[in-house]
Image 1 (cartoon, rainbow, N blue to C red):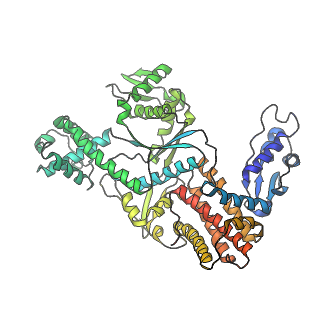
Image 2 (cartoon, rainbow, N blue to C red):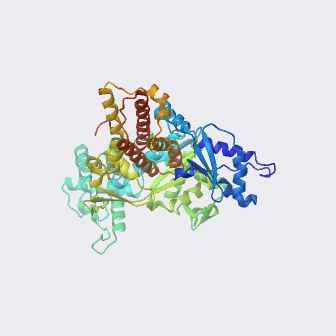
Image 3 (cartoon, rainbow, N blue to C red):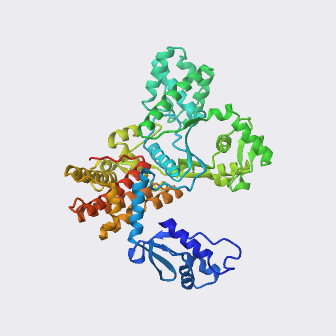
Length: 584
């Protein structure tokens, strides 16, 4: 219905006197649901938006627009309010027709075509495979998966991708940590680095390596630690120390370092895959960072930058003039030692995405990547790609609370709650919904006790209970020999005349607008808020009026209304990756 009104207003704008737009097209009107139905069902503020540029009185301009609105049987009347709002009152038949559409469309109700013919790649989670996923990664997974679902619901062709950091310093630290635990199993004794990965999950990987290779990678502890700088807390620098241990491991193991490296990578990546699968989060591709160099993507990106004339030499390094494209400083792409930078890999990866034909590059990253957006967009533009093709959403941190007390966590020490542990405690449904019930740019306090409670304060329980309650009503009707007749119900919708019924129809039929808004704003929390409001409307309707009445027409009409609500509940929960249980 919102689209209908926007079309009618657009037609009215096009019919304004010649010369109004000076050859330009009239603007797209913005139509919104009215918060107070006394002011109509929908409102449009286009007259006030245009009044200044057209040098017109906004109220008089609104009158001109209303006078040119095409007649439509679904609009009962229009009113001009305040300084120039145009309020639209819909007929009862309009709501009934839209409710019938819910039944006809089923799971497709709410889907749109805004992204039709366009391709999006959504890259999310992409946690370094240096340990199990923790609760913070879970928020990335739930948010990214929902964004992908929303884009698909708006007609985009969506590809889901996990970027595997299988190169770089953090992975070298992991490999070295595994090797040091392996040496302990071989009988070697030495201090473990302060900046190593200390979690217990390292020990089984080391044990598997030892079982397979026995003492093949054993080196004397004295040879490992000889000449190393001091570590913390012995007056040294923990970063300098771990880097020295990594260099020593590569020196002593030579080609064997890759075997140790891969042992950690393969085991942890398999655990991450399994955890995400169990969370209902699946990827079309696990993209290897190593493949960027092996496949020539980095060299192609550098060649593109050189061809475009946007690089320069300084202090023996190669720099990108990123400031020419909105970044706050220029960036090194090749160091003085000839090694490419992480930044070069980042822009090469995004160029590779564009080469694969994706119109939208949707990245979901941690809040600590706030400086990443401008530099990667600058890199894309310098390579001749549209900067607007990149959209990055940052995810704020998660804090767990148990019985009002914050759960302390440290990733490097291994003292953290894993996503798998969280799922085991509260369930996938609670985790998926709780993770997205606040905006991604807000810090999330995850209340474990609330997530497990069977109370109306728990949004998961409250929403799912509405769905289960509708299923119970239908079951009761069938048990009494009065099964729901969908065809008869949709034919009898004119009998729904109570205020609660009009409110229910208004709420149910808001869903397509919610999908558009949540998708455009990349805001899954809008879906959660809507679900709570729909559940509230249903619970109020349930308490106000009986559904299983003697009058067959009225009974089937009311059942058609709540079945429509059930359909929308299912559709919305499906986008969030949350189940819709028949019983609770």
